[in-house]
Length: 114
Length: 117
Image (cartoon, rainbow over all chains, first blue to last red; front, side, top):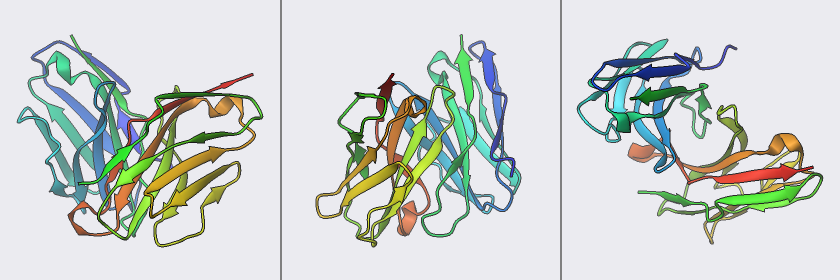
């Protein structure tokens, strides 16, 4: 089991640029989550999917953020245009939707917007 | 909405000693799940232990155990025989067992644990 795979591990970009973060969940998992971690706000849920369908996107901060899950093995989180306050670590996680199944996290993408 | 509170921003312990990290939560639900995750400097989020609210028995995983007090809405983590590799940020997390919040985790603010040699 390769675990949840995120890319890139680090991303440095200039304000105004488009950023795309990628995630491959664990095979067979039917839930996928995007979290953001900052010193000020801790771990925040941005959006999550069940069977590729967005269930709750109430945590997405602004229209600049969008997420897609075109199939069971791939998801993207896009920020366009990026701003310095978007700098954070972005985690993708997946779970098997049985009751109480723990989330398995990727290694995160550290995004720095200058 | 559920909230999770970790009142200890930082803790330290000597190697081989025992330490307890505190967590309280607020919910109106009767059935739910609680978790502790560990985040070492590598920043990977690692599951430490899981507790089902409808089980009175406290969960245990090797040196890690919990003290689950449902009425008090308290879920503390005890680490016995602390090791240097236990140095990390520890997060307490809540998961609903049903409803619109099913499946997602709500995290506390985290506690930084440092194990000293």
